[in-house]
Length: 152
Image (tube, rainbow, N blue to C red; front, side, top):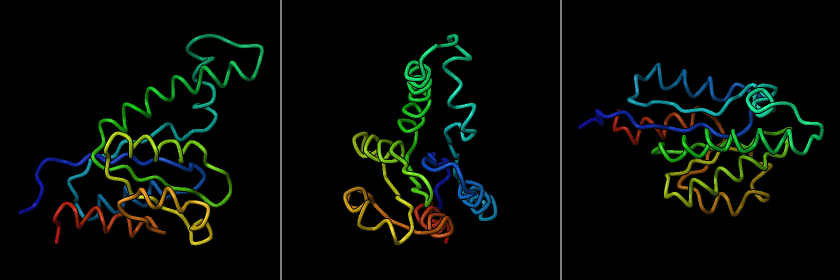
């Protein structure tokens, strides 16, 4: 029996590659019953939301503080609505936010799939230990989603 009610999957983590598009394409091609939730992936828009909504700040700390708080409303709400959270750790930047999202997902009892390259295995061993699955590619994540929606 196939799952009829769509699963909600939150796609968290690095924003400098097309991994989300690859997962969304795989979901679409396989016609999986999945609703994808995402953070704001335009870095400048995400960083500017606090000042845009609440007004300018003289100090960078308060600009970032406002944006972080507003973005956390979106991120936490999406993680709480999600059935599965996929967190991608990219190659170029340290993703402290991704680590936070992974921990929040685990604390909320969400199913967690962690995605990163082989070179990050040691650095992410505790996060990997808390995950339900660890993958290296978007295609592997899509295959897990296909399997858990019983689309065989």
